[in-house]
Length: 313
Picture 1 (tube, rainbow, N blue to C red):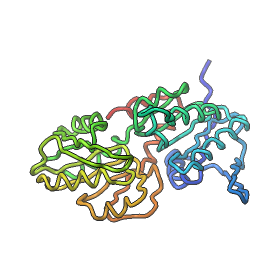
Picture 2 (picture 1 turned 180 degrees about the horizontal axis):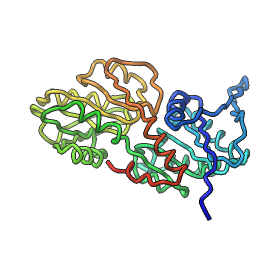
Picture 3 (picture 1 turned 90 degrees about the vertical axis):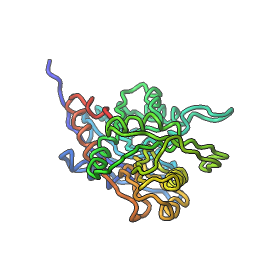
């Protein structure tokens, strides 16, 4: 019997509505109508204002803290399940709480697995996300996970810069695999930063493994939070003789004093995606949209086509 393709509808959580509209336009549909009622104590209730019975729906929403972003995604999934949607795909451009992917000391949670189980318990039948903090988080799910790479967005931009003596850098040991993948695609060298932290978000010491003299360096990371690591690494590389330092980071959390650090640093530019809405703009930020990437993958998923090309660095 032929495969029956149900209708596809796209909805977005509040904080991802701008990105949701871009994705829906690239997909070729209008973003679905959702209204949210809010009680005086802050409790809120999303409501689909159109029928979704028997359809495949995509719910777009990054789950970066605060917790209301994750809670809204869970409520949207639950509402879709109770409204008899046939397939419910949670599209998380940024999968929040992912830094807690293991027990790094006694008596702490593994939040990334907890979030995975919550999404499944709510009713998600598929997950689409991009540049997870750790690849193994895919294993926390029992449902299919499409883990996309933002390198398909960043590599064409880096190639367009036509930088001589290009070197890819990882801001820490954990990101070395990502850095090597970029260096292989760009056929250039790799350097690694070794850092030690006294407490979370505070670097006590940093050393550089490799030579950056006379090089145009591009730092590669999955996220930028306080920007302490990136800016310290950029300043260190310029001190060691680099010609220029740029950074590419998929998810721009930019919390605390990140904007101030960025402005004062020797970073030439910070290249990011729009997976998370920016709190404010900066001349040092270059935003590349991930809308076309997600729309393309969602279209292929809906029509049961291969998306393996999107997993190649």
